[in-house]
Image 1 (spheres, rainbow, N blue to C red):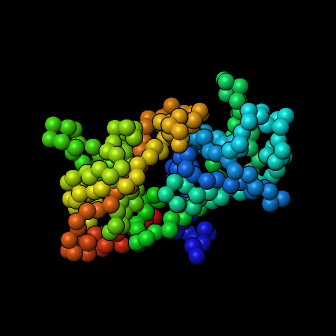
Image 2: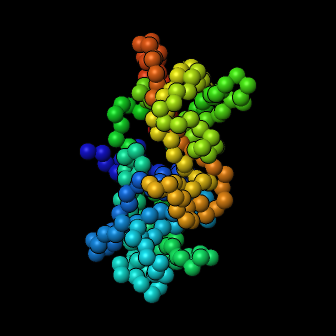
Image 3: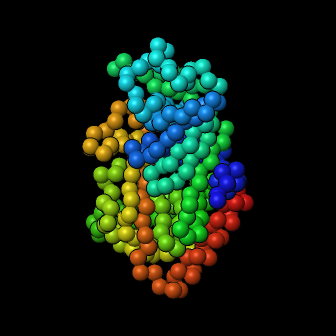
Length: 264
């Protein structure tokens, strides 16, 4: 069993925690909050503000309450609340916060506002040994040119294994290839460790910030993007047709990147 207290999984930098919190704004995330009396409630995370280092949330079965008049769980009277969440893709995210404050929107609705936690555990059950770039000072880059006349698209590498790679890009989901599409001749630049050119099959793609998170019925929920930030999207892709030599080389790169991340 993976231990949330393991330093490998703990995030303490505000930008890393903000990124993890944005993962939980995806409509397929499942988030439970437990209070000191062991009562649980399902909640939604609506967004996070990198300037004030606060995030916004409310019960999943929100019925328009202002929380001051209707607070059946005692969210405004409890002292500590534990978040236990499963993000899109199965990543486990755990943290705790103190009693939240209330924020009111122009349409009369309300949400709860909490500061970023002091630390957050992000646990990924990996099918293969995978290097996470979340807390690494190293920036690994990827470049892809959709067609000859098009401007190349630049990505940062979020995590990587011999199986596949997670990429982040400053574009909206609608501007990127759909699930099942093949991105040909993507160049991955690992700095002094070298470069690799490969074809990638897109397996999942979702917004991280700066754009609405589409729900199952196609409607964009309200108040997801509260800060007017530019769009950022995540692309998860599988390597296609790597030969044995390339796989062996990439496995060594993954190992070195993971060791470098642990030192940082």
